[in-house]
Each structure stands twice: as C-alpha cells, then as structure tokens.
Length: 509
Ligand SMILES: [Zn+2]
Image (tube, rainbow, N blue to C red):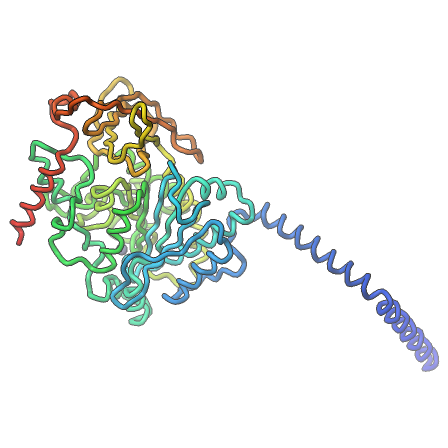
C-alpha cells in the first residue's frame, strides 16, 4: 500500500470518527437515557437470575474472615441497617469481664415483640473463646437470613415470619481475644475460658444435682428446677449470669450452643447422676432430643453418614453423628442441661469440627457444609404442638399452667416426665416427635383438661394447634386436682420446693 493511500484511509477514518463524535454530542441526552435504561434492565435481570439460581448466597459484601470483637458488632449493625424491618440488635444485661457487650441480633417479622404463639429460638456461639467456627457461621447466618428475606426466598420468609430468632454470635468475646492474641488460636485450651479463667460451660447452676436428689422426694417436680438465687452455690461469671437471665426471661422453645473440637450433635443430659464420667443419661424427652440432634447432623454435609470425620478418640460414625452428652463425657454446670431443667427450652450442643480455630480460607466451605443444617434445626421449633390455655367463660389467658404429656402411641401409655408451662399470654409450645399423645393442661384452682392428639410434624409448617379452656374449681384442694398416677399431686408445691432449696443452700454454706 502506498504512503498516499494510507494517508487517505487515515483521513477517512478520522472523518468517520469526527462524524460519530458530532452525532454522539447531538444525541448525548438520548444516549444517556438509553444507557441508563439498559443498565436498569441488566440489573433487574441480574437480580432475578441471582434470586433464582443462588438461594444459598450471602450478600456480595459479606467477607468470610475472623471478625474481631469490634467487627462482629459492625456486621450485626450492617445486617440491621440492611433489614431494619426484620431485625433488632440488642445487648444482654451484662458485659464481659473486659467490657465487651454480649450482642444479640433478633430476626423476626416483628422485631422487639413477642407475637402470640410464635416460638422463640436462639443460637449461641463462641462460649469457649477458642472455638470460633460457630461465631463466624452465626454472623454469616444473620447476613443470610436478611439477604434471602429481601431477595424473596419463600422458605426464609416463612421461617422468619413465623419464628422469633435470636442469635448471640459470641458469648465469650474475651476468650476469643485471648485465644487470638496468644498463639493465633492454635492452642487447644488458651482462650477457652473467660478472662477470669472460668469455663462458662461449667459455670451454670447445677440443676441436675437438684433433679437427682429430688427423685427420692415424694413431691417430685418435673419442670423449672431453678427456684431462685438461693440455689446458686458459687459466684457466677457475668457472661453466665447474663445468659442465665436471658434464658429465664424469654419464652425460648429451642436452641443450640455451637462449639468445636469434635464433630457431633450432643443432646442432654450432659451430667450423669452417678458421677461416672461416661454414662448414658436420658432425659424424659430422649426421643425428641435424638430427633433434634439428628435434624442438625443429617442436614450437615459431613456430621452423619459415611462422610463423618473422626476427630480422634471419639467415633460417632455408627451413631449417625449424634451422642447423649453424659454418654460421651459427663459435664456438671453446663448450659444445655440448665436450659432444659430451668426453663421450657430444649437445647442441644453442636460440635462443628475437629479444628477449633479453622483458617479464614476454610470458612466459606464450612458455611456450605453447615448452612442447611443451621436452617433445618431452626425449623424444629415448629414440631409438636402449641396452643393457649384460657379460663372457661372469660377467655382470660392462664399463665404457668402445666402441660403434661403421655405418649399413648400404639395403645401404650408412657408419661413423659418433663412438663412445660404456659407463658404470659397463656401460650405453650411442646416439642414432640410423631405419635399419639394424651395432653393435659392443669393449674391450681382449675379443673384439668385432657385431649388426645396425633402429631405428624409436616416439614416447614407451624406446630399443630391444641388449645385448652379450664373451668374454675369452686374450692381447690390438692387431692381433687391430682391425676390418676399414684395419687401424687402433679402440681408442684412450689413453697415446699422453695423451702427444700433453701435448706440445701443452708447445708452447703
Ligand atoms: Zn466447647
């Protein structure tokens, strides 16, 4: 090609470019509008595609990392800002020894309000400061619930609209700091305890001791063993006290406590009555607890089944990744037994893996392994039955009515010797596995009422509704109000129990 020809071509090109530029300037406004429209449409398409394809995703700005105590609060606030209609961040009544707040995020369609018959659920992480996976998974979970709710994930919307979820990512922020500062979380024990060196999962009032001794007494109480501060035989740590008050002041139905160092879902009792280090110690709700532990283990990608990873020593493969706490090793003063014996709450303890302090690179994989299980477990707050106890005629809600259950499946008759009680609005929740039950509501001064119920537990649906209306007794005496079994009064004589508790505390001091 000659030099002249090249010059002509270049001029032609420049001419075209100039013409294009003139055109662009003339139609700048039109073009601007078109581009905005295209971007909008692409955005809509992108969001639609993400919503359809990625029901497991977190918000794009969520970073898997080891959030320090300041960042933890920031993540919760970020979630609350993004989803103000379904979240509330609050703090427990006391701070850690070193002054960190024990921050909780509540996720519910009416944050801050207990809605009638809506079960309350809680997750607690990082009770042992050097067991950090639960802490990071719970931060991811809070982000996930908010993000998916906003994106229109129907399952998450149903769960959040019908459950009041409380998440405490770290019960031991001081331990986390100690563990991280010393040896970067690599030590098996450093940072496990709080800043006073106390293991918080041994610091709760030992209600099993009360249970095991009261079994010999004629008035055997089958619920709510915590009868006041006189039952505390040692000075509680502020973190324990804060969580204990949280447990006692809220109508929790179900919860889990997230740990690490093993891979297993552990259910009560944690403490054996004989003092033996390993002894299967079933609660009256053994069947339900096995189901609850299994609900986590089976939805977890490696906890149950052939993929189970043995952390050395304790092999739970053949047990489906679940274990009774005391059968594994007996623990006194643990949180899960306190929940069961001191309140209406059913709690299990989740050991999330061999490595207590996994690397940041490992965290996305752990989210993938645990996310379905975290959700499936929350859904279990809806198994069994729920309802209200009211006074006949007036419809007045009856608080502290006792709900007794007999399992009468296949013509048998087994009492489940652990009652739940109705709360302020007269509501109760009773977690049960499928079967037929005779359920009795009773309260001093009222005639007890029994109903036969067949529980089926349909996944992702609210618990079956069973309401009671109790007629007033003209004159109440204990014998009139007792059930058939052994003529024992089923309504606990609280004043006597209180007296016994007081006597016990006097013996100790
Ligand atoms: Zn632990």
